[in-house]
Image (tube, rainbow, N blue to C red; front, side, top):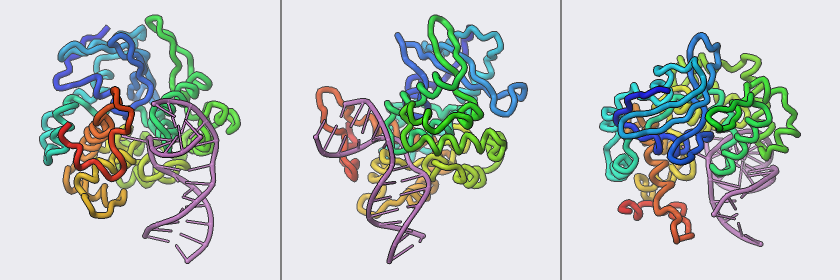
Length: 308
DNA sequence: CGCCAGGTGCTGA
DNA sequence: TCAGCACATGGC
């Protein structure tokens, strides 16, 4: 069991902001897999089954795996990042200020790039609930089973396992039209034609253009992988929710993903990706469906919802 | 039942 | 280069 100091950190905001899909909350604890990258683990790293809780500024990580180290935990949760300084650089307007105020402590995880790539291929034209279900079934079908603390789970499948699966079986897991994309991309990674480990060391533009060669990977998914898996903090994934947040800045002006990204970089700077996560989480949770079943906001209408 | 979801690939102008 | 369209599926 580990007790890790975690100043300026929110476990809940970090795990529930949509950057990761597999953590499960039970009685205030989060169960899941913590991916660690060490040279001894080979090119794709490995994952540790853990239970995580936060009490104040202390993170408690419980595991049955003796190989886990405190530095893996600190690295995965990005506790080495000076969050206060990052937030200071992006806290440049009223909307982001609101978002930071509400979700302060949210950090961009350092996830396993392959899991990230595969997961966000599944995310296209989809909703988070179903994405979670699809990924879970994928893990049960092709991942190694692991039990810990009375909790059963499966590791995320290796690229080879998915590359060797049939498209029919992948579709049977509910992947829909994403099945062929995922299989093709898994093949690319399994054959070493796309080295995610290398991309972590190259700059944003280069790694993004490499990701865009994968089937099922467009601008948005490439930015998600760059940000959540490759530590490219200038990546700014633009989805329908971020378009709504962007309406606050563009007003009547026409928006395209490219223009939004250019704006974000200019407006928020080098850590635009952090701003993206705060905005995404903020806008998605505006007026959450309590007794009100109407959608929180409609397309093109966010500017009036700032003071919630 | 109808609309929407952390979009992408393809096509035709 | 870019708007318009099909794509599978299930949550709400």
